[in-house]
Every structure is written in C-alpha cells, then in structure tokens.
Length: 95
Image 1 (tube, helix red, strand yellow):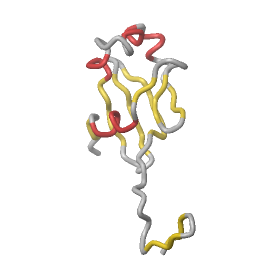
Image 2 (cartoon, helix red, strand yellow; image 1 turned 90 degrees about the horizontal axis):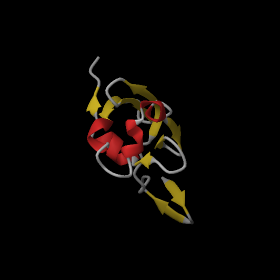
Image 3 (cartoon, helix red, strand yellow; image 1 turned 45 degrees about the horizontal axis):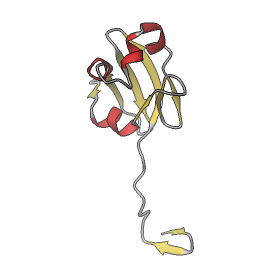
Image 4 (cartoon, helix red, strand yellow; image 1 turned 90 degrees about the vertical axis):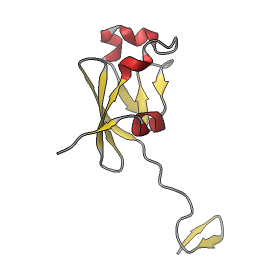
C-alpha cells in the first residue's frame, strides 16, 4: 500500500515516468540515449531538423552540445525535446 496526500492506495496509482538519464551525440544527427528504466535507444534527430524550432541544430557544434536536464535532452535555453518523443520514437539497441 502507498499513501499519497492522505489517501491510501493498494498500489501506486501514478505511472512511473520514463525520463532520459544520459545522452551522447552520435554521427548523422543521432542521439544515444539511456533512460531511467535502463533501456538504451538511438534517436534519429535528422528528421526533426526541418522544423524551425530544431533547425539551429544543423550546426553540428551546437548539436554535439546536447546534455540532460530535468529528464530530457536540451541544447540551450531555447531548444529541448520531449522525453516521450525520444522514448517512443527511438530504436532499441539489441545486445
């Protein structure tokens, strides 16, 4: 059982959010991602570069500055991407 705000639940009613734990920029505008559930995936960012909000990332030096903040990938104070987009639209790495 778990108690949240004075209400007792049989199990945690809140889904555990999957967020980005680690990012490494790769060649070809790809990101190697490690998520909080332990899965590693590759996200192809090249498909997003045609959108105005992501077009500055065509500058490879800016793209390679990707880092994790608040559970998602950011490049600067203006550019970030949804952790759900990264998780659900990336390719799993098979070992």
